[in-house]
Image 1 (tube, rainbow, N blue to C red):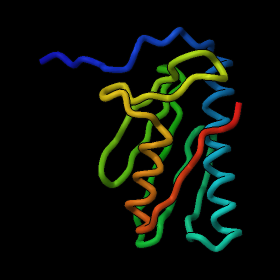
Image 2 (image 1 turned 60 degrees about the vertical axis):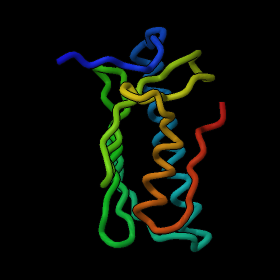
Image 3 (image 1 turned 90 degrees about the vertical axis):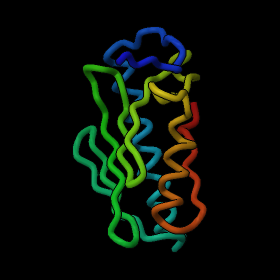
Image 4 (image 1 turned 30 degrees about the horizontal axis):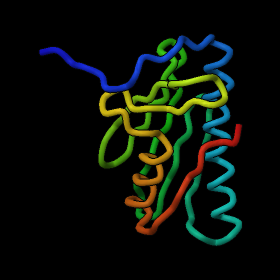
Length: 128
């Protein structure tokens, strides 16, 4: 059985670029969750340890986001599925796309958070 990927070939990131980009993603997610808490939108707890961000949603479900430096990937584990994402495009202007179906990271994350929280929520990518 062979597995094919639908994600376009990405120019290689340096380790420094990957670290900078992936940390910006995690920081953006944390800032969004903090804003939701401050605005009393939804009660999601976040806990970050290095490149691992654990989101605890209402009802006891979790979403785990993890950086994978050796592979230059972001991993997302949600109740419905797990995904691996690679950065595609120019550093600072690219997007994180699923290695299997080419879907965009922030679209998928927003969908999973919305489903698990029970209300429509949107996480935007960091501004470049």
